[in-house]
Length: 488
Image (cartoon, rainbow, N blue to C red):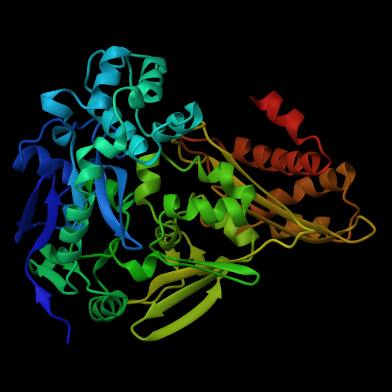
């Protein structure tokens, strides 16, 4: 029998907080500014894009405390149980001086109007704690989710490179207090389920994966909230009510990554940031795409399972996962089943998932050495933008240079992530030449009838998909570097 607690407990800067009355849709940003009067955390976009609301959230991962930069505007208070929230007000240097990150920003003129500055400071703070001597590339990556209209970014990047001139992480309060904070977080994660509110205002924080499975089977109408990078916008932009809500981002069992001969299994709660080391090692073809998912804060929150479970036609992981032949693990109560990922998406807004059933894992077969894989994301901005379309291409040739296997999948081209079956058929058994590729291009119109919207017209999407197949062919012929230079 699972014990039930009646309060969400977490650490805020230097104090412990216990909340017994929290609505499912209460964001961390609103709570900080309106309830706690911590107004250094700003509201800019309210959709996780601008970074003005960036704070750090410390969590336990493999018995260590890890601090991630997150956007407070789409992070719900219900997801904070057993964590440590750090806002810009908590930063301090020795003897009342500015913190090294703050001093570097002052000395390198990294702030003008100042509205976005706290968010930049917190993003740089999180990076500096992980890497005291970051490269320019690492700084730019950490700041992908922070927008500034004044400085042109160069002074902020210089400040990021200079932080360690003012101090080292070992002298930072978060470092010095790490053991004490970890012990407190462990005590807060006491193995009890948290339940507060009732009806549509009910918040449930399961004690374990098995507890989650049981609770969701009993309450299939409840909304599952993992990273909230999608659900958060339902609240801030569409004013939707999401209760009752089950928050699962804390479940360690859903953070597992299992590697075995020939495949990697990501459990559904693994975030993009947590998955990156394994992706880079096992699927290096995906690393560039991975670093273009939103900004660092969103990658720290968004989960692999969530990107699949919501069934979005423009999710960036399903096309390449489908091309890899991914299998999806689904669970309802104690019952589990496994299906091909491509069979999960049935129609727009409809997936092969029964009431009370949830995505538990996705298994990716490793790419055989003789096969070639590439994935391309087309968007208006390179960084922090939603795809107009995303295409994945995988091909295997026989010893005569004929196409033995082809798997091509796209997001943004149809109501669901979908394979280009007609194009694949047109390529099979043909020599891998530009003539064969050109001959297969008309088949895209059989596979897809894309829509026109704010991101791209139907004509553009169809032409871009065709051109991406040609690009893929040219890159297999060693012309990829020239293409990348021309695109840049």
